[in-house]
Length: 311
Image (cartoon, rainbow, N blue to C red; front, side, top):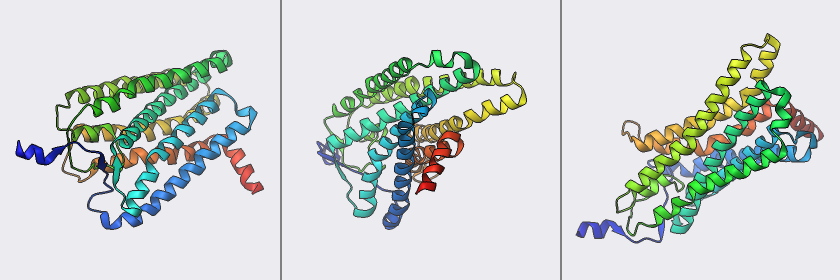
């Protein structure tokens, strides 16, 4: 009992980590981090501006793309400035409530991004498999209702997270191993039975990411079935419209699956593996997505190049 009193207590804040064993390099690691953050800000803001400013781009495909850019922008802003405080100013303390808030928005925005990737897959399915019915299926009303439904689903699933974390009365004083707050890390510091948190975390993974990845897979199986029946020119055109989305899906799901696996089945063979996966999951998608769509989407690429020529 004496040991428990020493290691467990009520706390008002948590201690975040940068990258363990690389503390002496934190100052220099802050520079590539801020470069990535600036690229994310500029890229996603540029895509949002181009789509909002040009009426001809107010189509389902580009509306979904603008949603993806807004989510990526929000996700990056949720954690990257806080990480810079750790790397450059060694400010590691974060209040209990602020940590819970960051955790909620991180998981909520992650769920939204997964949902948007599903809607983009459905958009490609309708465009390729039912092109004549595209405008009648993906109407403005349908897009609005779908967006509200996805936000409601994300909120309904993620709102309980802060409450099932806050119910723990005692906490270990160990620092969090990530540079930002996530549910998988917080529950491990609780001095209590965390089975409820484990079960709910598994439920979120299966209900949100599992179902979303299943719908994306089904959409592309139906797309492939249609594409193989097309002539060569039409087949190449159909495939080219899907490449950007496929890249975005891989950029999102590969780090997410890696992060989920290393947290559920920790390994000591590669030190800090979960930290590298966590940083990759946070940093890659907001930075790479605008580059992917800026290069691969003709209309976006044309307007960016036109804007740069004027500058």
